[in-house]
Image (cartoon, rainbow over all chains, first blue to last red; front, side):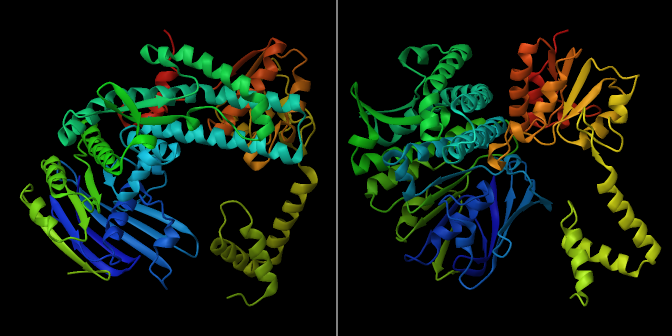
Length: 389
Length: 197
């Protein structure tokens, strides 16, 4: 997939600005606060239907205006063009996505049509931060290649919402007796059981497949000094299960855990077990010793891990979309080269050599010299105060 | 834009109706204002009678003018199988097929804690009271939403001990569609619910 043109109207600090991009390297530079990242953010909104920075749409409207509009025209592997328009109006708080003149009413049918991988400084929270960030990251990745997964995930979240609402309401209103409430919650548990196990198995399969990508990518950046390890942490999985889990054993186990936790859940008014509480663990294997990233990695190791992770996501998406007309994902690198020494920049730039379309933002114009030789085509954009020069 | 308070009020009331927006409401109100009085009186009479005559059938909870309703009262229909639906509109949809010869039960809603609807807010009690008789089979014809599925599981848990056959309607590929045009989710569901031959 290639983004040929982009038009921003009243989006953040852009009043009306159009871009025509290179199918290979797009180098966006400028001083801080001029709107480099805003361009990447608008692209993520076209592909993901929301901002990779998790900003609300209302915050993306240019100061003093009431609406914004992002229009992008894409081209897939077989040269078919598609235009995507993202409209937001503050008054009605209405968000509208129009793809090839058709309103997108179900975003789960849209996600994955324009695959995208973003690497930004905020991604450091993946190795440093909370488990929900890691879950969200991989959910988004798997969803881009599996609509069934996205659908199951949405359904599961809805069930958890309903169950939580039942538990929480009853804490306040005491509408049901303890026995009645238990029966009602048990039915929700029965509803979520199948989906929960399906999601877990999909995630475990995903890790199994993803491992080879991240190991290879790591090797190309740091050599054999250490090996990345990603594992799935769940209450209902122990070491033995990972070797050979079956749907039925997982189901029985989850059912048991849910039943054990029923009293605590009722007392606390919230659901406590299931894949929405599971964790992806990032570790490094240094000559047989395992270190958890979150607690024992250095700044540089965090950064390297995240870069390798995101580039592997690219490889993973790419391999999974190979049989479709969609083509390779677009890669956004937001301010990735700051704080890195020249040799690392060289290494990363080598890694993205044979990539599809790449967008790079940086404050340092000199990085262009390092990057441009690895691409057959390139274009530079100097951003000054919401204008491209 | 309105010049008359009465017109405004009519439009406001109309706009409360489902699938009628403000613009359509204005247009209807304007149309009624220009219509001959007998037409408007006929409409308002019909509306009043709706409230006057329509009630819920004491057996199946469907909307009816006679109690019990014509379906519950019919000799030709078997009381052995009961089809459970969410809304009265679903009865009309199934009746159009002319295939189902049993009786109905209308729940008037589905269980959804997020909307504050519990089992006691829909016609579950009425259903259980009916099941003591010669009912042999219950068909759950609810929408395949999260809440619909929950209601299905909840009801089947209640009905199971009564030794009554329970089934739910199938979901999958619509009749007259090619497999290649169906979306992934539907196909996945259809494979899940495959039938052994």
